[in-house]
Length: 169
Image (cartoon, rainbow, N blue to C red):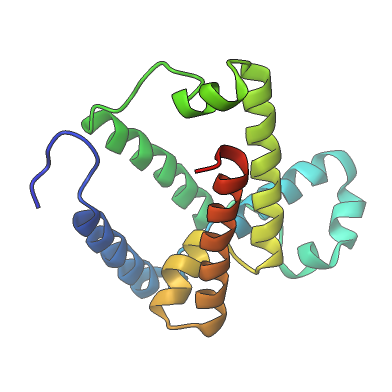
């Protein structure tokens, strides 16, 4: 498992994610997952503007809008991604990836707009599927959940179809 200065070893990262998942189950009795935390944060923001409406929604009656351990998980994911990119020498000041620029041009507004819409669709899909890629792909798959395996296959198929449609790869 040598580190050549680029991307981290998938064997090392997979092992670390497995250890993290076991530790999370052991210490908090919770699976790894982030999409519910995004929904909780959205509920907190909703409370700022219309508390009565937010509290009337069935989801927020069952899942209280609050900052909980998943928010720290999300912060750790962002920090971990930065550290991996930094130690791998992959941090650049490039706003528009080369492949995107070749197909769609160099407009930052277009790139950010498509990223925002894509993120919104992914968040909706994660809530519709009852969890995100980390919830289904890591925690659910480790528990051999049939639903999580089906969701994971759908995530991959959706990614392949989207890449094919966008980039003709």
